[in-house]
Image (cartoon, rainbow, N blue to C red; front, side, top):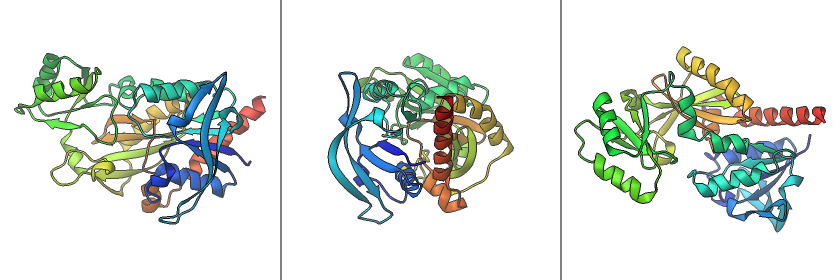
Length: 319
């Protein structure tokens, strides 16, 4: 099966070839005989009934400083692609939401990964609300008094933007921290969205586990350990990845989530677990597959493409 694959992603020429998951997915696609086309979300448009992307064919290679070769600029009707990857980084704002609405319009004929309808309706910090017994105590609000009362109940809390990513804007507030009002004022000055607050889990100093699931099945996990004096473990802000296995509790969490993810067409997901508590379900642009491959030799990109190819074969069989 040779596929024509369009990658909707941030500029490929700027990615880290040793860390970026989309780059690894693209390399695997080429090794399986698939052709790649890359465009950025600002070059996506609805044009008289068609969803058009302006971009270039690409050939990727694992060569530092020379990792991409571009073809000529062209306009592509995305209905002509076999697979479109929705992989640009958040923030999950109205521009991001609009792109999912546009990609929805081709989803009946072109396989969009992850399914844009469910990406739009399952943002990272909201989908976890479907599993309250698996998550730490959580509050979503803009009201200062509600957040104060939540902190009074739980002591140390973490406050973060509801639609942020990469650890940006995450604050650990202790019971006597005087900055809560100012912090909420800052968030309110940026946007009108509520914030999410969760009970602080002290075990985060030992790591925040990223578990990779493909079509609802566990592929593997890495542990992300924060720097000394830092509460955030995201690798974007200096977290260190290390080899790790799964506990019985974590397998229970994955067993609960797997069928839901599969049903919703969320083929590549990464869930975050701290001390046995589910904190996020990453469906927009999950990362971690290169680190997993280095530590455990697990080729998650191969598993992802096998899942995609199975879904395409099932579509063909269904007519």
